Image (tube, rainbow, N blue to C red; front, side, top):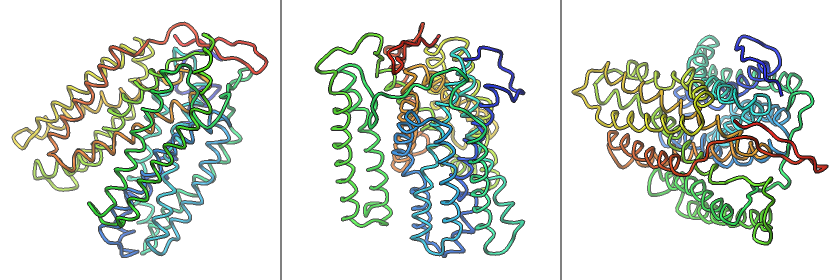
Length: 489
C-alpha cells in the first residue's frame, strides 16, 4: 500500500480512488433523497393523502437497516468495485420506476426499494480502507463520508430547479429520472475506473459468508444481543404504520410483520451458530482473534452520532419555527447549518483520530456532543436566535466529527470483515434515528435533546472503560496459509 502524502487536489493513485468513491456515495444519497424536495409536486400529481406522504417518508428509511448488513457481507465477499457499480446500476432503474409511477402502490414500492441505495455508504468504507494506510485512513474516511453525505443537500438545492426548468405537472418525474440517468452513467464509469486494492495488495475475504465471524464464546453471545436493536427498530417502524399510530397498516398485517421479524432473527441466530459454532469446541488461534466488543462500542457511538444527526435534521426547522415564531423559509435556512457542517466536521473528526489516537478522539468528541445536546435542551424563546444557531452549530461539529472518528477506526478492527463492521455500525445509525424520533413523539424537543445527551454519556462510558486503542499490527491469513501483517497504528 502507498504511504505517500495526502494531496487532496491530486487525482492519482489512492487520491483518485477517494475522489471517485466519495462521488459514488454522493450520488447514492442524491438518489436516495431525490423525492424529498419534490414531495409537494408528487403529492399534488398523484393526489396523495397526508398519511400516504408520511408512509413514503418512513418507507424510504425502512429497508436501509437490513440493507447495510447485507451489503456489508456482500462487499467483503465480492469487492467494492463490482458492488458499488451494481448498486448504482440497479438504483437507476428504480428511479425510472418511481418517475413513471401513476398510483400510490407503485410509488410506495419503488420508494421502499430505493431505501437499499442508502447502504452504498458501507461499500466505500471498505474501498477507502484498502487504499489508505492507518495514519491517513481517518481523514480519508471522513472526506468520503462527509462529502458523500452532502448528496442529500445537493438534491434539495438542484432537483427543484430541474423540475422548474422543465415545467409542467410532470417536471418532478423528469427530475427524478435525471438522477437515475446520472446513476446509470456513473455505474459504468466507476466500474472501469477503480480497483479493489492497490497493485500487489491482497483483498482479504471472510472464510464463511452469511454472518460475521467471531472468535470467542463471549463474542458470540454479544453478537446475538447486538442484533436485537436492529429488529426492534424495524418493529417500531411497523408500529408507527400500524393501527396505534398512522393506521396505514391493519392490525393483522402489523402482527404478521412482528412475527416475520422474530422468525428472521431466530433464523439469523441459527446461521450465526453455523458460522461460529467452532468457538465452543476449540480455541481460535491467537493470530486470528479480534474483539467483538470493539464492534459493539463503535455501533453505540454511531447510534448517538449519526442517529442523532438524522433525527435532529428531521425536526430542527420546525423547532426553530415554533420556538422563535419565524417563517418556514427562515427556519429552514437556519437549521440547514446543522447538516452543512458535514463538509468539514466529519473529515476533521477523522483527522483528529489520525493525529491524536482513536480512543482519545472518541472520548473528546462524545463528551463535546453530550455537552452540546444538554445546551440545546435549554434553548427556548427567551434565547437570542443567533445564540441558538451558534449552539446548534457547536453541537453539530461534535456530532459529525464523532461520526468521522467512529469510521476512522472501523477499518482497523479486522480487515477481511471491514464491510460487515461498517454495515452493522451504519445500521445502528438508522436504529438511533428511529429510536430518537420515537422519543420525540412523546416528549418536548428540549427533553428530546437531553435524552440524546444522556445517551451520549452512556456511549462515552463504554468508550472510556471498554474500547481498546488499535496498536501494532493485525494479521490476515492468505488462502495458502501465508500470514500478512497490516499496520493499524
